Length: 244
Image (tube, rainbow, N blue to C red; front, side):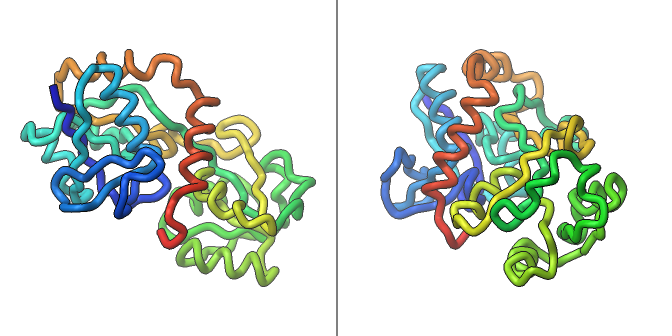
C-alpha cells in the first residue's frame, strides 16, 4: 500500500527541501522534520494517487538512486533523471514526464528578431563549459560562441551587456525570467531550435528491470500532456527556493 520514491530533494525546480508542508509538500521519510516539493514531487503524488498507494519520498544521493531501485529499497526514481542509454542498461524507464527545450535567455525583447537558430548568426551567445549546450551552440550555429563556467557568470555577463544571451533549458529560463528585466527565446528542439537527442532533454521515471510498475506509471501519466507539464513546471518555478 506504500509507494517508495527516491529523489535528491535538492534540485529545484524539480525537487527541493523545505521545513513545512506548504504548497502540497510531502514529508521526507528518512529526514526528520523536513518536507520536499517540486515538479517531481507533484508527479510522484499523481502516480501514487492513480495507483491507490500512500506516497513515501526518500532523500538519496544521486549516485545511490539507481542502486536503491535495483536493490528494492525504492520502488521508483522520480528525480529529474534522463533516460540515457547507459542508465537503460541498469533500470527501466517510463514514458517521459517532461521534455525541455534549449532556449536563449536574453534581456527583455533584446533578441526579438530571433525566431530560429539561423538568426543567431554573429550574436554573442554564451553556454556553460562541458555541456551539450555548448557543443550544440558551437556546432549548429554561426553565433559568436562564448564559453563560460556557470549560469551565474552568464547571467552577470548578460546583465552587463557583454553577451546577447546564453543557452539554457527552459525550466532554468523560466526561473530567471521571473525578473521582468529578462526574457527568453523559446526555440523548438529539432525544428526551429537545436537538434538534440531526446534523452538529453527529457526526464522519465526509473524502475527495476522488468517491473510491472512501468506500465502502471505509463497509465497514470496518460493525459498529462506537454501543455499540462509546462503549466505544472511554471507553478513549481514560482514557488521554488530562490537560493537553489
